[in-house]
Image 1 (cartoon, one colour):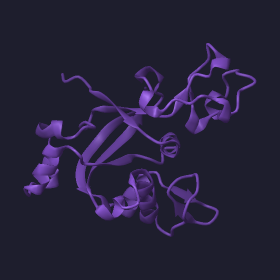
Image 2 (image 1 turned 45 degrees about the vertical axis):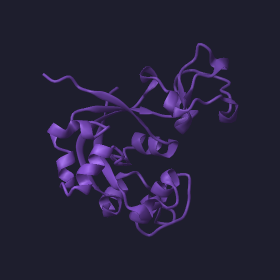
Image 3 (image 1 turned 90 degrees about the vertical axis):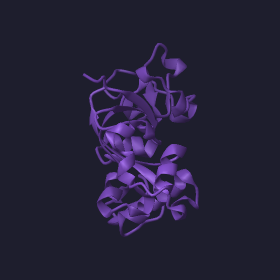
Length: 203
């Protein structure tokens, strides 16, 4: 039996909340590996890259593999030997654990997500599908599955639950999300992207 492979993946605080709330079940990441780009430039179908025999093309894995989420975190010294806390949901992540006199978020020395160790990760995802497509090929349904925020008060869509421009449809909200992460010209560039679908599983 083939061993399950695990890899780390970074998510921002708004996307971590979307994962925890079950609103995010897919992520798009730009295809950057030169071998994969060469195949696409040579005319190979995008589906070729996602075939099991070409697993080395995708840095995120194949269906059945798992992704452990890296997010901004800390272990506050004044709670020593306290728990791991997470900026995306602090202080709610400590509810019911009996901690008192919690420091404000601004007083905590947060560690970047890239420095999170596997043992501190609280979210584990199992890949259910991998494919390659152009960024702008995203559908209404996929934009919703990307975790963009639905503001029920105004019945509009924003990139995240932290606000931003309001849109009637989710795809423009995802465009804002992508541009906020990758730069103002990133959407117009319409790159090839890995579309990684997943489900949350117990860590």
